[in-house]
Length: 469
Image (cartoon, rainbow, N blue to C red):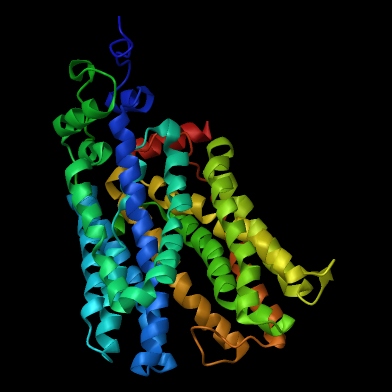
């Protein structure tokens, strides 16, 4: 008997998918989904370069440029839950494609904004952020077999920052040639990715089963595993195949609270340091912006290394334990920065050392915590769990500047003026969010690594009962 036919199912269709050998076309799906994530990062970061050009050309005030730069974050905050609701009701694939098309068109149309019309530019950036609410991470999680889900889902956080590198290289090499409008036109590029997604990406098998469409799920499953169609059992849909409402998330209050505290704990520290750190270092060390950028290259590198670490480590010790380590590690690093910032070790600023160490936890740790929210809930509401993570993360991006501005006594909400007197309370405030997240996780212990994703609420309850025994 061949290896393809020796894998006769001993459980249901999902058990088979979780254990069978995968065909090469499965990895094409993974690459396509990760490519979509790279383009999201590319678009999110290239706008900073565009604004650095149009700001002086259009004579924009600081407030106007701030609104432009913050618009995508506000849009992401607004679009996260609605897109997640659409994905839970109508499918992961249409929501993902719709989000990709929306942010691509909005980004590309910026090239045609009349000179000086900053409000229209900001509106387009807002729509770009709304489009980020697509469900790339949810679909990636649900197409992955349980045995490799933790690594695959987290790996998207490792490759996505390649979009930042792509944006930097294109600006450095082509801005003098094609101008900012030419670069903005590149915003249309993800439309090609959307076309590829429409042609090659199937609907989530798990979502189809959750909605009572087992025949479609079985046909898709046969395309991606080395098992003949006739040997694949017809998946058994749950007794309740209704689409989830947003309020259904709160049937699991502990999981909702865990997401909120965990995401705020990681996000406030990470976004706060990214925002405030360069200004603090420039003032304390009395060095130029270029020199600060050189120092922060080490911080960014530490974050990338951390993303790799926290992509692999949760596969062995679990997502919950990894998140706990990252929250307390981030808290320790930021508290160290709060009290040790005036000192040097062999000529190296201790502040830099603390931020580099912290980057491994609050930046790197995001690759573990971002998929966690989707995995914590049954498939019928999983996209909304991921949307909750995005919404809380977006809130942290906006709340961080406001809190730091209040502490520093500054009206500058985008880059608060860093006074030495504000450094310790500022960093301690950021650390407090990580501490609260760490305490919350000590109480709220939920694990998803190695656990089959629950199709229904009843299956999730069975997982919980088994975990207690």
